[in-house]
Amino acid sequence: MGLRGANHSCARPDSPPRVPKIQRKTRSAMINLSETPLSFDDPTGDATKHLARLISFDTVSCNSNRALIDHMAEYFRDLGARITILPDETGAKANLIAAFGPKDKAGIVWSGHTDVVPADEPEWETDPFQAEIKDGKLFGRGACDMKGFAACVMAVAPQLAQARLTRPVYLCFSYDEEVGCLGAPAIAEHLAQLSEPPEFAIIGEPSMMKLITGQKGKIAMRAHATGTAGHSSFAPEHVNAIEFASKAVARISERGKRYEQEGPFDHDFTVPHATMLVTMMQGGVATNVTPDNCTLTFELRSISGMAPEQDMKLLLDEITREITAPMAEKISGTGIRFETIFSYPAMGDARETDGFKRYATLLPAWGGKVSYGSEGGVFEQIGGIPSVIVGPGSIEQAHKPNEFVDLDQLEECVQFLSGIIDFLAPQ
Image 1 (cartoon, rainbow, N blue to C red):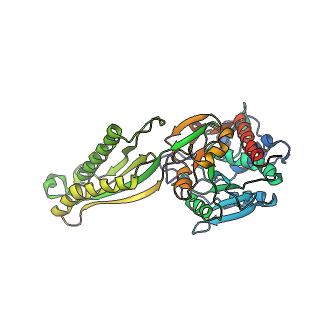
Image 2 (image 1 turned 30 degrees about the vertical axis):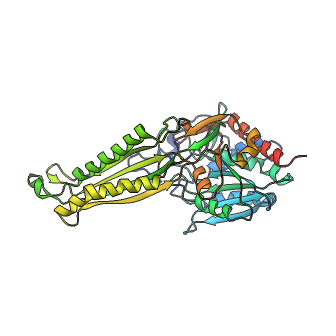
Image 3 (image 1 turned 180 degrees about the vertical axis):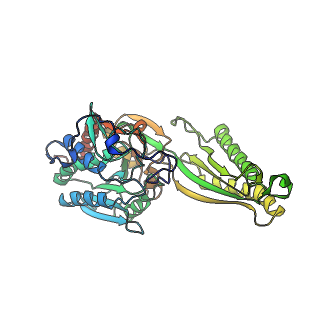
């Protein structure tokens, strides 16, 4: 599910230790779906089995996703797909593109990410990486965000393989979406270089199978303020890093208020404008020492049509000119420096594009636009591929202990994808 946070580690330093499996409360009798044979004539049932297998791969963002990618690649390859694997620089992580259908037509992308956020919370009642079904829900880390969509794609892949497609379908699965959409740009670039690039993309983030036609972009920043330390009774002789960092916080807050008052606006979003705010701040060592360091993180969430990088540059130039310069004038070597943690673009409204119009009658009811992140903006901005979000499960279940997806959502997604296949392979 698009990026709500970043830098997810395997163990959160501020979280209690993970509860051993033996201490977890048992929800119901365990169903080892991941070892149950596929039927190939019951796509919905196969989706649950695929999902159980995908959940069993611990692909928290700090871990390698190669075992899962190799598993999916082998499955699609055996069905006759054209396989492309795009590894990162280390080789420990990779993207997967599996293509079905002709090469000489503009096709459609079905996209998902393979990484998940940590599952360290003691509230988990079962092993997060062992799928379990109870009361029409399948539980496990990534059940809705977003291995559920990947499982549905795998479930209909045999239909893809047998269909006489008039246009290609590209099954794209990325690494490290949860820590900044790091893998998706390579996929988008690869697709853009095809002789006939795709004309439309469906991002399978959890949307309760509603059509989402917009997503905000994000720039996450870190600022390091360097001052000089000394006994606080001699404060006028020092450069107080927290004091000057606080002045930067005020400028960031002012910029956020300006978006709220002046726009631009898009009322299809719950918050109809860009937002900017400070999210974390740390500094100082003792009550009687002038702080020589302060670090803060802040973000800009943008809407389509803005120039967020330009807006950010104007803000940083202002802070450098009006806050950093006086620090350095007082004592050389002090100041504030900035670094970009990650960024990803907003996803615009694709409803007026040719690709959207081709599939419009197959798409579900409109569900608005969302403020959480996804790779849709990457496909649009880097690949030139208009994108929408449609996927099983609720955003409310993502990034929480006891994450689940309703089985009827998996069924609805399977039927939706199967309908696209039928549309592309008329009898």
